[in-house]
Figure (cartoon, helix red, strand yellow):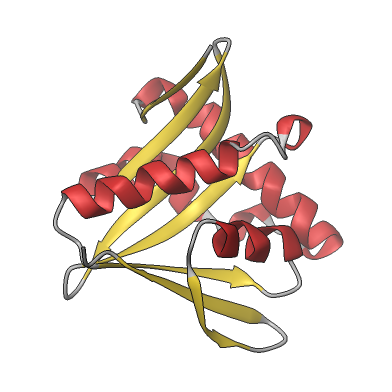
Length: 150
């Protein structure tokens, strides 16, 4: 059974590892865990700052995560989206993004933004398939937005 729920402190180690493993996969030899101190205490870095951190469990295993940060002008930003590589391409990335967008809508946000590394093609395609529109793109970054106006 697949369950989407909010992050709890007991998820700390697994969520941190899930995100760092995804980053290591993307950046390979260039990756340095020390550039991610926010992951040392996800509750303090995100939850206590008003962010929504969600996880997906499949048969009791934590397999995906994502965070919605509140920003100025009723805007949200998606960060730290990660799916266990052994079960990618099963809709879990779409599900976590969709749930975060719905949480943004219910909280009164009017727009959600996300930034993806342009060379990380699967991430770029994920956001496009979820209905985000590209607002800027270069060789390094792709900026997306989704209007939540009804």
